[in-house]
Each structure stands twice: as C-alpha cells, then as structure tokens.
Length: 164
Image (tube, rainbow, N blue to C red):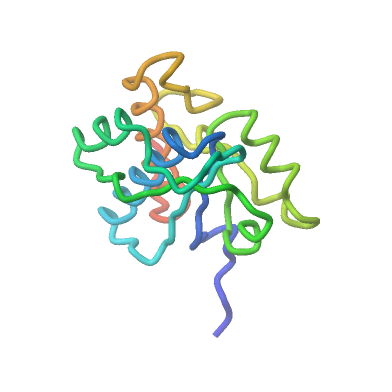
C-alpha cells in the first residue's frame, strides 16, 4: 500500500508566529479542537516561533484565558524555536503573518520551502491576509480569524465538504 500524498492529506501541521506565545499556540489549540471534533485525531499539530527567547514558556496569560473561555486548553503548551528539522518533520508550515512567513521560508532547507503557507488563506467567512496580532486589534479579531481559518483548513484539506 502506498503512502498518501501529504500535500493533499497532510498529517503533520506546524503553526508559526514570531514569539510562539500568543497566535501560534492559540492556532494549535483551535486546530487540534477542530480536528478532534471532526474525528481526525491522527493529524499531529505543533507550533513554533521564528524569534523565541528564552523558550519553554507558557502562552501569554490572556491567550490562555481567552482560549479557555471557548473551551480550548492551551495552558500546557510551551514556546519553542522553529528549526530546520521542523521542515522534515511536518507536511505543512502555516505562518500567522507575512514576517513569520518570510522568516520560515528563509529557514527552510532546499526543497522544503513549498511547505510554507499562511493559515489566514484558509478563512471561509472573513477574507484576511494575516492572523491579526491581538496587541494591535484585540483578542476578539484574532480569535475570530484563527477559528475561521482552522475550521476552513479542516474542511478544505481533510473533510472535503463544499465551501459555504
């Protein structure tokens, strides 16, 4: 039996932002929740940052609180730096914004840059080009974009239902 094409049916997803303390852990939690609700527990989801210091820190308290308000637990996640090995270990690397996209693409080993994309491109209700930073627009906009994009990702990549 042949291995499924991971570009069509990804099994290992990495979500990337700058510090790995707010947007990418939120996206990791929300994508995991969407996948679990769709019965797709075999898909692995992780997150990393392009400029993490010092690392191994919990998400920001407000991010933990806002996720918990809608039933998503991200308190156990810890920040970590994006590495070259991540490109070998993941089928898709989805950035939260243009800066993290450019930095991830620059880090990608030869032949792995095609794995880098934008989570925001999977939104279904609101067309956005990036997942907004809550420091600039508040958590409501950030969470709405993340939830929409995570739902869209699951529908478009794994469930294959028609777009509403």
